[in-house]
Amino acid sequence: MDARAFLAELAGQEGGEGSLAHVEVLTARAPVVEPFPDELPELLRSRLGLLGVHGLYPHQRRAVDLLDAGHNVVIATGTASGKTLVYNLTFARMAMADEKRTALYLFPTKALARDQLRQVRDLKLPQVRAAVFDGDTPQAER
View (cartoon, rainbow, N blue to C red):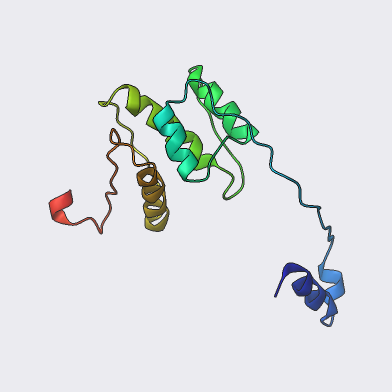
């Protein structure tokens, strides 16, 4: 059932018409994408391209630029809006410049940690070794 059918069914139920305060259909629009920073290493640029990423959304570009300038950044955007790419891109660039760089990512759930690990590993950067440490990590890997 799509969203419109769901809303129609909800409104059609006894007393349902009053449970919807506002319904608005927004027209789809093309995403706005900005170019990668010029300083982005070619290897990282090509790996991102293989993953279908050919630029940054404006909020991602602004965050990357602020991080490059030495600022602390908090990104508060919706699900699947590109927060992960901002910190992965920033750390990947640092690790490519200095293989001794380290980062500790903390996530509230095992599922999210595993998803984030996959995204780091998808970049296939030889300078980045990523792993998950939680209660399911085998003793030999700790």
